[in-house]
Length: 312
Ligand code: P6P
Image (cartoon, rainbow, N blue to C red):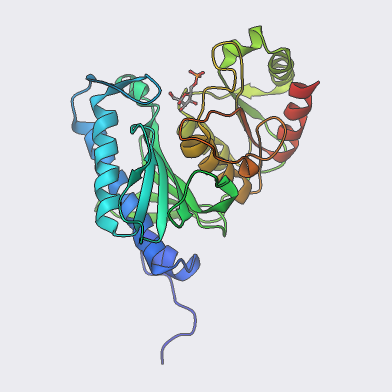
């Protein structure tokens, strides 16, 4: 007799979780597994490729490392191979890349966030967001049907949400992502703070007020890689991450489309909050690939406190 509720296999794989827990449409399930395969190959490239500059620059004028280009090529390869991608927007491409307008999904991604930290052997990551249809500009991050990241640290972790909680998987010895934790949650109060673009305190008095507030009773946890720093919040179940405007980056350093939007989706799915200093980042309209936005994400009560301090 076939059991009514599917029992988890001995090792709950990402594919099993997407099919039986998330109940993701097949095309989305396959796309997420393909993105995880790109992550598996990017991790191998990080561990085995030579370092150094590629000689090129990205749309932001940032010098590209050979690894930036390779990670982008690997992600593009798997997106094209999936057959499910209408177009994509990558930090390493100047504009949106069309693939197949009849395909069901569009993907935004930062193929290797924090890549400048690879030579100091810090954890770095890939970030992605998925939208239904072939349009990205004009959408809001709330319209994402999935978002996630792959963290390349001592362990390689794949984290995703399709709108029913945030779930983490560990890359196993045989190259499969095996379920590590379901429904990661974020409590309302924070003990740790992760302050990016900290030089902004010199010309953003609200950010200086927030820093003084954090230094009173909280503990700094900051690596310089957004993926690692926000994974710290999801893993510990508390914390606050920020990167807000100052003289050098008036809107903060981070991009809405492939950094802040996916993380706002994940953090709010885990019970936390996100803000651009005024409203939830999920409700910010995407107007351009290179659009930057202030970001404050993490424990709900702490985000509320910091937004008040920024706006005073
Ligand atoms: P800051 C890495 O280059 C990155 O894009 C994010 O991963 C990280 O949070 C931020 O920049 C670091 O900013 O101001 O600390 O150098």
